[in-house]
Length: 147
Length: 224
Image (tube, rainbow over all chains, first blue to last red):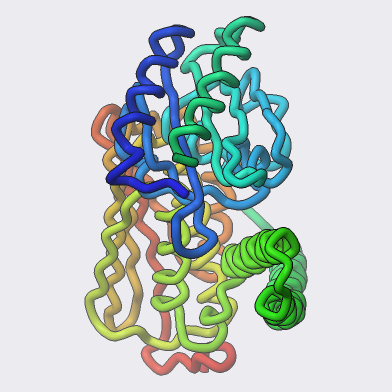
């Protein structure tokens, strides 16, 4: 599981590196707490405020909640338009004023326990190569957590 | 100006809708969530009674999904109609909702209460609660504020609620016809109150809700 004292720094570096590599505005990492079912945003790069630290991901809701419940990647191309559910179900998009975002699951012991989300404050989209880079970053984070 | 019968119909429709919301919230909280909890404890029992490591992990995973689902149902129930709103009172219901609001949107709410809560008729409590919910939702959607100050002042003949954010502000005159703001004003009007919105660009917005009542209101029913 995510161990803050051990995993924070390497994952933060991974997020910063990813942000630089794909030239996006925001990168966030959410993971299930060690105790209880809560999923919190633990790490962010390019954040405008500290709201992410207080947000708990609602299971099955919004981009992060859906990625964790389905175990599959998800993309929002033009928030708040063409979304599933209500605008208020996407707190990280509202908090960071994101228009575009792409999120992939982070697995631990074969179950989706977290999410790696990249976003832009414009509708600038990720290229196919960028999407692969995000997936590779998620795989690296999975390795960091499982060590 | 709105005619009397039309207002009565609006009140009737609103009341029917609130009754239905309350029924669904209660059913989710007391029915579905309780049943799922029974299944959850059964699954936990299965986990402890199996020796097969692979099966143990699988059962644990199922229990976790169920635990999250139960939590989500309880959150949904509080959002629809906090159980305390009709029983304990407006302030505890608001506190319970604000806890969920902060953990959902990451916006810190400082809440203060002056004076002692006067037990309002249930429809007034629900009306005030819905307007507060709408104001808070608007802040999460548009204000770009990390903090909200919410103040309740209970006086002898009225209650005043101030909801202040420190966000980007907006031109009130240009948006006064918007559905959200108009609905808040109308909802207050239906229970005999007022909703006053002031905003300064770059400094934030203040929403003042005022509801007057007879000093001997009876919380169980209508004003006496």
